[in-house]
Each structure stands twice: as structure tokens, then as C-alpha cells.
Image 1 (cartoon, helix red, strand yellow):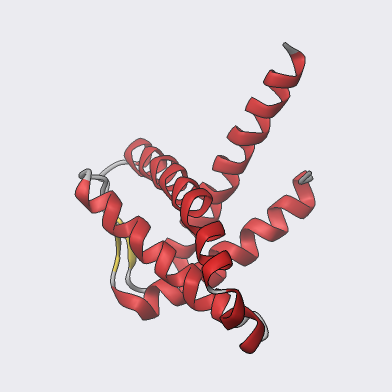
Image 2 (tube, one colour):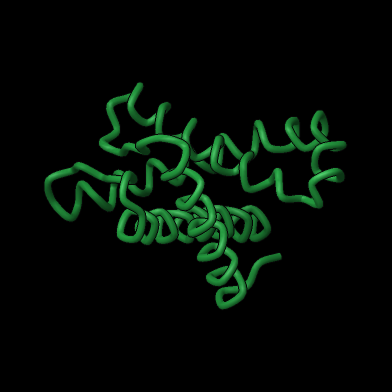
Length: 131
């Protein structure tokens, strides 16, 4: 079905966008690393981590927003920066648990990495289109 193919392309595009944003974070933030030896391994790692990050966000972020709604209002949304950092930190931990060579070294690296991933993902979505 054509609709299913379009949805599949959208999912793949999102994963590629997040993988590109994660790559940028590894380049710009000390403490976020991919330790795969070769380029193919690094690309594969970033794709797997993008998938993990997408799943973590899809499952936990709506729950966190619902439960922590008052904090979002009280902080004018700034708590989202902390939440995104914690979700990236969790993604790094999950990656390590399944032997994916991706590491996030502490909250500060996760905080800046989450900002970079968010901004770059937003910019790429603007350029490539996001429904």
C-alpha cells in the first residue's frame, strides 16, 4: 500500500536525521563518543543509537510530559532541556547494555548533546520537511 510506504520512508528519514544530529553531537561535545573502529561501524552505530533514541523518546517522553506537566508550566518549558538530557543519557546506557560502541559521559555531556541533537534535528526537519 502506498500509504504504508510513505510512512516507512518518513520513519527512515527521521532515523537518518537523528543519526546525523548524533554524529554532530559526537563531533562537538566532549564526552559523547562512538568507539567503532571504521567508518561503516560508526555509521551503523549512529543508526542503531538513533533508533534507540527514537524508541526511548516515543515511549518515555509522553509519559514524562503528562506526569510532569506542572513542571513544564512552572519552568516555562525549560525542564524539557533536563528531560532531553536524561533521555540521551538513558540512550547511552541502553547502548552500552547491548554492546553498541556509543557512550555519553555524564549529565553535562548529555545536556549539551541533547541541545545539539534537538537543534540539528529541527533544522534538518525544516529543510527536508516534517509532517
